[in-house]
Amino acid sequence: MSTDGTRVAIAPEVDEHIAAAVSGAGGRLVDLDDAEVLVWLGGHEDFPPLPDSVRWVALRLAGIEAFIDAGIIDDARVWTNASGFYAENVAEHALALLLAGLRRVPEAVRDGWDKEPIDTAVRSLHGSTVGILGAGGIARSLIPRLRACGAQVVAVNRSGRPVDGAAQTLPADRLAEVWGRVDHVVVAAPSTAETRHMVGVAALAALPTHAWVVNVARGTLVDQAALLDAVRSGSIAGAALDVTDPEPPSPDDPILHDPRIIVTPHVANPSSGLTRTLAPWIAENLRRFRSGAEMLSTVGPDSRY
Amino acid sequence: MSTDGTRVAIAPEVDEHIAAAVSGAGGRLVDLDDAEVLVWLGGHEDFPPLPDSVRWVALRLAGIEAFIDAGIIDDARVWTNASGFYAENVAEHALALLLAGLRRVPEAVRDGWDKEPIDTAVRSLHGSTVGILGAGGIARSLIPRLRACGAQVVAVNRSGRPVDGAAQTLPADRLAEVWGRVDHVVVAAPSTAETRHMVGVAALAALPTHAWVVNVARGTLVDQAALLDAVRSGSIAGAALDVTDPEPPSPDDPILHDPRIIVTPHVANPSSGLTRTLAPWIAENLRRFRSGAEMLSTVGPDSRY
Image 1 (spheres, rainbow over the protein chains, first blue to last red):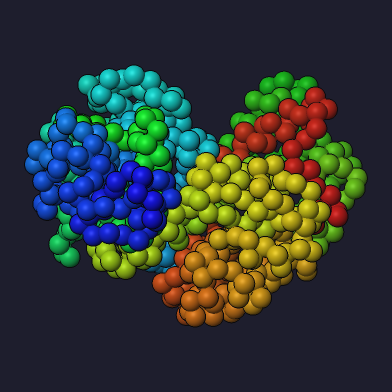
Image 2 (cartoon, each protein chain N blue to C red; image 1 turned 180 degrees about the vertical axis):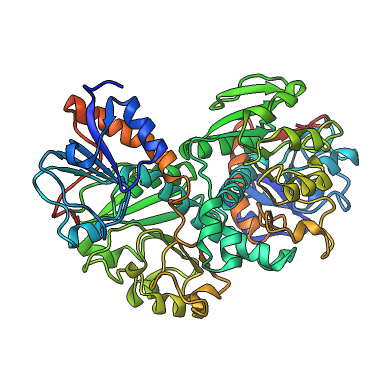
């Protein structure tokens, strides 16, 4: 093994897929004490003290709130998460949920060949307008998918700075205007004090009755009791959630037992096989680190978006 | 009302949406005896004898086999179906079914929050190769959707003439090569003697074990007993069908009761609200008829592909 590669520690346990990717991208596996780079595959609870030699820490997560809250992420080195990598996967799941809702797939499966009620309920994504709350990586990955399906997008971000591919971008302080302009909503915003219950009673009352609400971000962004009321009353058509509040829901949570609410168990980014699919991303960032190029998905102590 | 518009009959019953579209496109409603154009909203069983004055018949269907078999479609006038209109809708449903399968949406809904088995089973469309059997309007509408999702397409048509947007196009006589080159298959071919059971025992054995088979065309194109065996044995991952053989299936048909087989009741093109959504298509073709431009979706006595 070469001794002149970038010194990379993989912890808390060495993973074969990540190790192969590191070697292939010019890295050399070492213990943390001697590392320039730490690929941290664990959570925030057992994050180790870092030697000064570590100049880059690669986290395997997209949502890194816990690392920030714990004061782990500092200004002394480069930190990356995997938000760009996850964005494609989450955007695909969001599209799957929206289409499953519009096309009434779970209801069709549950009810057998009961054509008339399904035929009457099916709607097309084609020709509709979808609001995307949050204009980060998930939105950037979702927008071209929606456009290829013949839908247009109204994006909402903090600044209101136009988002590529969106027909319109609204700043967060004009969120109340969104509900009347869209057919459906996809929640893809970060979890903050400001975004808590951003889809609440007022939003649900203002959305059209054919609206589907999709949440692939965090359960707390949607007022789940209000959502349940809205679906039950017919104020909206349905909801499709990969995240819930609380999570996991209790087995008797009504959110799991309404035919118009689709719940998948937080699997937009499956954790099984994660390192296998994450490995090329780590390799790409290692190549960038070695060459001094701009790295993907850098984060800092103040990163919340 | 103007008396110089194109004379259009709408039968067997006048529909308000179609009537408004006809008037807006320069048509004038008349009885069939006096018509230049017949918009026929019925089936083949009660299709009326046509006066010689009728120079164009617009059928509301995409699959017109029954009209051809009954000898209704002749060479004496222009006939159109609505295949281009339906293609977008069917392509959307095909994508919904494929994503619902890959993302295990119905299983997740049925099993409540049972994360581990779903997390392990979820796969991404991103990075996969999808075979599309049949390269007509559905394929043309589906290909850009799949590409926006990060998938590539292997198309199969009769001639093997390259299909726009497909990474590869194979002629039908090389169908046996397809199964080993793709991750998933979407059946979107016409129903003919040659296409019957085109997805049969050999295909199902040759597809990868992670494969999903989607059928949005006709139930007879898939050997349904072989499909059931393949899913039960784990030879493929699952199937998602909007069409069955026979159709409707009997309530105790095992196809309706396997957790890895998603069945929607032939709703890719919902018949509810059909004339409302079909109306702009009829209007466009009427404008083309009046100006002598090439018409959309013309068909003839030999239209079988």
